[in-house]
Amino acid sequence: MTFTSHTLHLTARGTDEASAWYQRAFGAEELTRLVVPGGRLIHVQVRIGTLTLMLADEFPELESFGPRHFGGTYGAVYLHVGDVDAAWQRAVEAGATVIRPLSDAFWGEREGQLLDPFGHRWGLTQHLRDVPTAELQKLTTEAFSQPG
Image 1 (tube, rainbow, N blue to C red):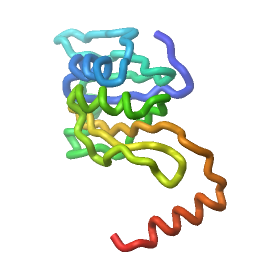
Image 2 (cartoon, rainbow, N blue to C red):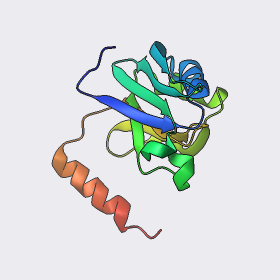
Image 3 (cartoon, rainbow, N blue to C red):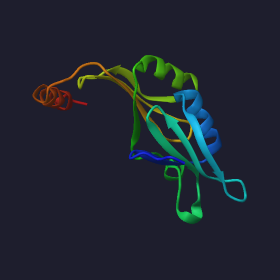
Image 4 (cartoon, rainbow, N blue to C red):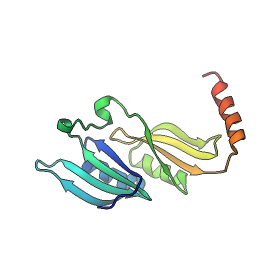
């Protein structure tokens, strides 16, 4: 097992299916798999580009639950890619649900958000241009000052 300073741990119902889905949708490579007696997966390590994910099945006895247990997720994992349109299409074809459609954002990124079949939110983004902080603040204020 190898870890980096930015390893994320995601819990899901159906980690075996999640690993296979991340391979189809994001080109993940599975590195390690550990099974506990009874068949649950305690550790499935995958790599997506430079991102390392540790995946595990739910373990209620350890108070470890996936987003479905709580009725949703609290955040998003962002993948910065070279061709966001191609990455987006691949994820949608694999069964991701569009939360926020892919678009060119005022902060200089082409981005959107998806929900995977396991309840985790993913942002896919591609850098388009650098936006100076003063301009970014102006654009942010304008964007959030408009009615709803």
